[in-house]
View 1 (cartoon, rainbow, N blue to C red):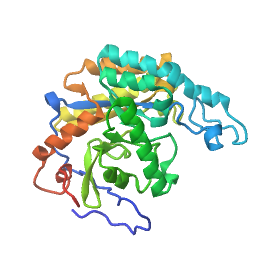
View 2 (tube, rainbow, N blue to C red):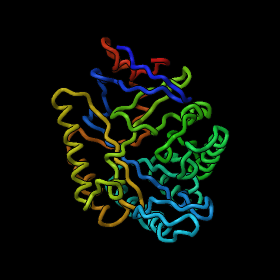
View 3 (cartoon, rainbow, N blue to C red):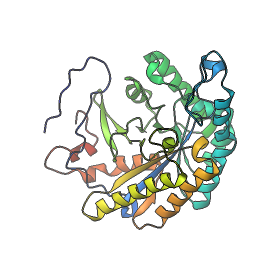
View 4 (spheres, one colour):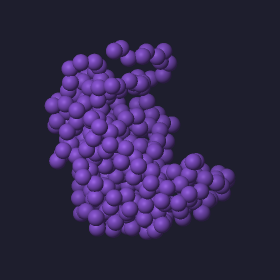
Length: 327
């Protein structure tokens, strides 16, 4: 089946609206899991837009009201500070107590001002996942400036965690150069800047296959702020639970195993009431057969090591699971 063509007027990756189509790969997860859950804790406090650094205020605190750029927004600043002072530690206690591995998508600048968080990530065996240098729009940067920020982020991660980050994703809006820069940098295994699938896949970057582990804006606590909003934490829990149930049932009815990404933020899900939704979902998932939790780097490594075993002959689609340039 031929991919649809577009009259492209801009640089960057070509769109792929087909993906695996009707023939997704017959994935086999570790221990034969039906669904693997990837929890990503976004750690952004101190890396967001701020009056002092950017001459503007961020809008992603506890509410969407924006103070004009001519004055400093202390209210939003303190909403972010809750995440680094209290929220991240509540989530840390929760996941460590339940023995669930997570990926902590941290902005390098945020880790630099609170290195104790980096210490916890490493000591607890979680994944230090690079969430850019700061929580700002890299899509607005020149290629050279984006390369410089990426290098700065890598240096901070190596210094604070002792290793090069294997994964990368930005504040919702990667640039047309981001994936090319990741391949050029050479130390990354995957990125999570796409939200277009429920399984990893390889993207062709100028003839080089590069792994994408898709993210999710649906199974995400941003819905406490974005309409339609979660009125109570139970709405978030129910959204996660029914999503997992549906994925498991699809597998039981003959579908292929899937990945479910859950996105959390320290300043939102780190609040005591909202943490209850996270706790209830994790405990529910742990009680289901054929459901496991994996760090994103482990999902990526497993995919690279085993994807060739899942290739199918037949209509286009499943073969895209295998790292083949220009697939």
